[in-house]
Image 1 (cartoon, rainbow, N blue to C red):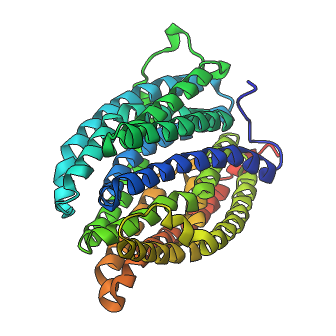
Image 2: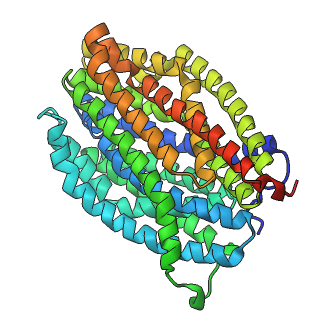
Image 3: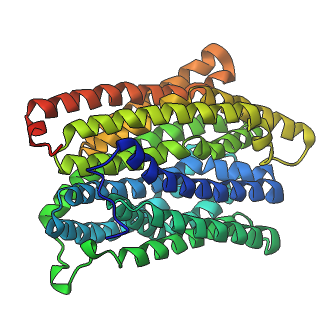
Length: 455
């Protein structure tokens, strides 16, 4: 039981920070190998290869986000069962969610390959980068079962309060990925396929480390007689996870619309957007980590019927998020131009134009970063309460705001309008999530559930 953590007692600030810190460190390593991947591609293979990967970014995220949606959705029930100290139900939930993860991975894999070429055509992908994008995504999509394995196993560990094992897994995976990137692309000259293969091998290593650790946790260990797929539990898990996955799907559709418009501005513009979007992960490293921490924290405390403690933890998370966002924003303003410049090589005139596009886009996102942090904090808190419908609605708000911005704002202020799509999408989601959270918590208070609190 040493590797699991009960979050229903103790200081929320200390608990959330201690849980989120390993996740942040893990995300730093994950973003490190993502950045190295893009730097190797951009500098060794050139701007066309970098633009090709960027062109497929939203389609890649669409598939990945569905995997993450199901894995994280299943983990909500696990956190609640653990918080309620119902070990029998916890084991049933684990076995059933494991089976569902296999089925979901198979379905997403079929969808990914069926949708690959048609969606790239719909996006009006420039012909000079179309085959490169297809090659890169084909290798990535072949690894969907590996990606599902890692995300599911890591989500289970986080639901039980273990954020350190995913950190260890990500550190080892990232270092392997960086080494393999350099070997496959710079030495073996396997092109973008080599970069994709390095990513999948790293994910496989992460999954193996998480799986080995999970097998040592007593509360989740099952006997043969306990390994039954429970249809009732499966229905409950899908009820939680489907809106989660659909929310990510909706957000991805908005991103694909943005990519469609950007593709009309040429390869240099695509490359500039790609360089900044690779830094997007750095901007939200802490936001994602705080979100995972709050999903587990809220889930466990909701299972233990500690409602006032949930409020205290969420408000603590808001403060942590705003302070962190301000610090990261300042760093991007000071060093962002040098960072995006590290992705770009080639003709000096083209490189300078691409860096200018990337840095301008980065500054706009950095200036409004607290909006993104509030999005993650309130969305994750609602998910911890078992509410995956409102987060799905917030994904719809993101979709509407992205499409409206990308279709109309450039006509009013020029291509500058393209840079505002993300910020306005965050704001649209926040309007749904903040109001939804406080309405939901007020409703829980009226039911008298808080009278059952333990402290």
